[in-house]
Length: 58
Image (tube, rainbow, N blue to C red):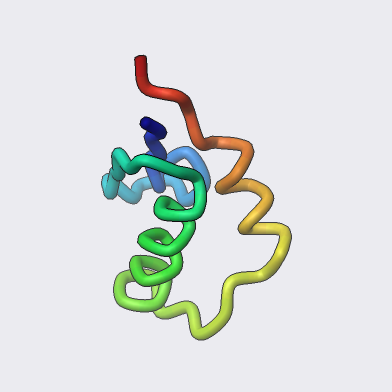
């Protein structure tokens, strides 16, 4: 399992996910970025920031 907190990349955002894989987190974060943050596309730099902030859940 993996976890990601949007606030680790976007200060002030309290959204968090726990998913089975990095790819699942990235899909959910992409949908969240569009719906909540109004992003029509996610730059590669942001994808890399998200990947770097994903944590394993023990």
